[in-house]
Each structure stands twice: as structure tokens, then as C-alpha cells.
Length: 526
View 1 (cartoon, helix red, strand yellow):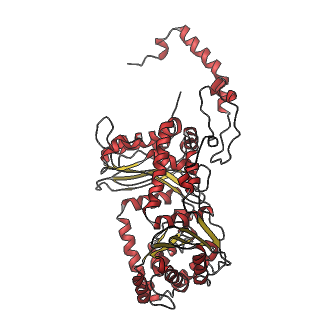
View 2 (cartoon, one colour; view 1 turned 180 degrees about the vertical axis):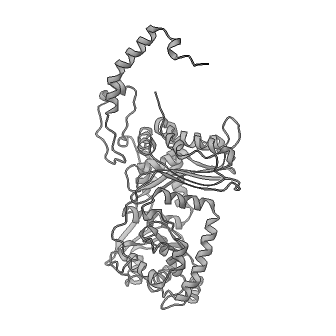
View 3 (cartoon, one colour; view 1 turned 30 degrees about the vertical axis):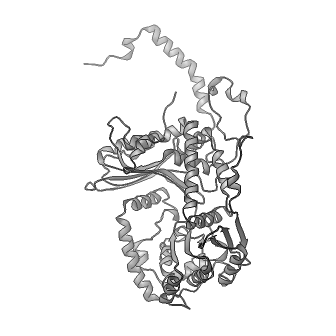
């Protein structure tokens, strides 16, 4: 039976009126199609338009202001924040920076922060930064491994290290009277390690075993793959541990070349937090690290790191026998030093996180979290856990959501995630933004109050990223300057109709294809 045309159900008069309406709207449609697209990631605050111009009739009627103005004149800084101890900074003659924050107590956290990580490696040397972290604990020219371990044990020192894509950190927690000895131990490790070939061969086996263990951690694999697919043409997409082949072929020369190229005084910050005097600590550092090289040398010098070009793409590791699907969806976000960085921190707090052990998550202020936790038509949790991440680097970043769900719930989970990002772009309310700002500030204070290591790390990271330590009063003022129009503007710039990177692992046969995901980064709104 042939279908009836829509013309059969309408009179000729109706058809004429619809045709005439289309002709009348055509010029307006053409004008709308030629509007200029706003510059992406613009950090310049637009001049303030007059109120009557912004709201005066036409298509702009009812639109909210799309810029973030200054703090209101009535804004007051909490006096308690102004009483916090300042961070003192000294630059030594060799270019090394020393930063301290003095607080009462009996312990001190000492850290060496180096502006060097896996991003500064070449394809052949990938894995050197992490390998080097292991080798520094294996003995030096002046002290054997046993002597270093004994000295650390006698101080009651907790010595540790970690490597990221842009930074490497070595830190020690000691009593205030052992600060000098801790500095001597750190300098002995970083400047005089001997890198015995036999120790290198033993460490290869250790790192290969570590790589096998990491492969069993789904979250680690998903985020490594996410960086790999998002930054396909950049060193930022390489894994921190390196490739198995590179680890097997690691040599003493490759390690020494990496040190000569990256471990220089101008790229290092020595930090102390706790019961320490700044001038005295700076003199200790000057003496302990006087032999630190001042200029990069060797064949591994990277003069300019390659820019990170974000690529919309996906990578899927399907395993139908796995009990869960592990999925991360990310958009490119702004760098750490961008003016909109506080707004992305607020958005991360707005979206939130949860796991099934948090029974109150169903009442979360985030609609996405409440739906995933069980506030849905089925009244059943859709995800085992969900986490909003905001990973920022010196020139780019990844903002998105990682969730774990069963096969039958993947589609609904992803729908909830994509819908929430559209709500950020078009429906972020004043109440939700104010709640997120309070939660964010409480999280920052809670981390800094937990232990001295957190304070030490905060100082070191900010010194490398910003060149200074941002006070808590300034940080809170930047957060308070974020309002709902700012969130909507930044979310639109970052997420609305923008390419995404997707990494998935496990039982993911029902995960929508990339075209579906890309199509749901925008919505028709009338």
C-alpha cells in the first residue's frame, strides 16, 4: 500500500502559508549562517557591553552575559586566609630555586621537583625518566646502596619518588633536625649515582614485572590508551613506563644522556614545608647542590617540546569475557596557566564522582552522578563507579568522565554522561555553581591540611607551573570569580560540538560507535 503524501492531509491554503513562511525566514537563516565563530580558548576578557545593548530585543532577548566580570565590590577575603604563612622563594647563583613554607611542628617534608618527564623523551628513549627514578636508589660514587639505605633508616626517613608526563619528584619526610642530612642524601642520589650495569640489568626485570602488573589495572590501561589516541603525534601520548623493547634495550649511556639533558639547576625547585627557616635551608641547598649542572648537554637535549595536537578518535580493547566495561570520554581542555582554568576546576566539582560504597550518591547535586548511582527509571545503579577527571598540562589538557559499568548499562551510562555535558553548556545554574565552589574549596583545604607532603607537593608543582606559589586567598578569589555565565561560556567553548577522545576496555560491545558519541556533543535547542 503506497504511503499518503503529507500534502494529502493539508489544504492548499495551509501549504501556501508554509511555503510563504519559509521564504520569509530564508534571509534570516542565511544571516545566522554567516555569524563569526568565537575564538576558541580565548583568554582575553571581552569589553563589557552595555546592558541595554545586550538585552535589547531581537534574537539576543533573554540571553545571559557570556563574560566573567570582576569580583563584586562587596567581596571580602577571609581574614584567616591572610594569616597563613607565606611561601618564601630564593633563586641561587646557579639558577636553582628554593621555596619554603614555615609551620610549627617537629617534622619537615623536603622535595626535589624537576621539570622533566616522559614528554621530554624521544621515541627511542621513552621510559628513561621512570627507569632513572628506580636507579637513583641503587648506590652512588661515594655511598653504596646499603649505606644509602642505612642512612635513610637511621633518620627514620620516608623516601619516595614518582614520575609524570611533565615532572619528576623526589621527596623525603624527616624530623626537623635531619633536614640537612636528607638534603645530602637527595643530592648524593641525584648528582653522584654510578648506574652500575649489573644493577641496570636487575632493574630491567623489576620494571618489566611492574609493567605486567600495570596491564592488569584497567584504569591505568584506559588512561594510557586515552593519551595515546588523543595525542597521537606528540610525546604526550607515550606511556610513562616506556615500551617493553625500550626497557630491554636500556643502557647506562642512555640514562646518563637523559640526566645531562634534563637534570639542570634551572629546571629544578627544592622545597621544604614544616618547621624550617628559609635562609638556613637555602644555604643548605646551595651547599648540597653546588655541583648541579647549569646547562643541558649531550645528544638527548630536547630544545623545544613538540606541541600536543588533540585528535578526535577512539581506541577500544574488547574482551567479551570481562565482567565490566571501563570507558573514558575526554575533550581537550585549557592548559594550567589559562585564565579559564579555575572554571574547569569548578566544572569538575559540579560533575562529581562516586562509587557504589557511597550510598548517598543517589542524592548528589550532580544529575549525572545521581542517575548513574540509581536515580533513574529503573531505580537501579547504572555504573559501579564514575569519576570526573581534569588532567592539565603546560599547553593542553583532558577533561572528561571515566566510568565502570556492566554490558547492559553502557548505553544508558554514556547517554547520561553526554547529556550532562550539554547541561553544562546550556543549563548550569547559579545554585549548582555555588555548591561546586564550596566543595572545591573544601577539597583544597582538606588536602593541604592532611599532611606536610601535600603542602610540599603543592608548592613544588605551582613553582614549576606558574613560577610562583599562589596563595590560598588568591586561589579562592579566582574560584569565587567563576559564576554560572562563566561556566556556560567555558563549557560551550570546550565541549559543545567539539571532537572527543574515547578509550574503552572490557566487555564493551554495546558501547555506541564514535559517530553516535560525536553527534551527541551538540543538541538542537529552541
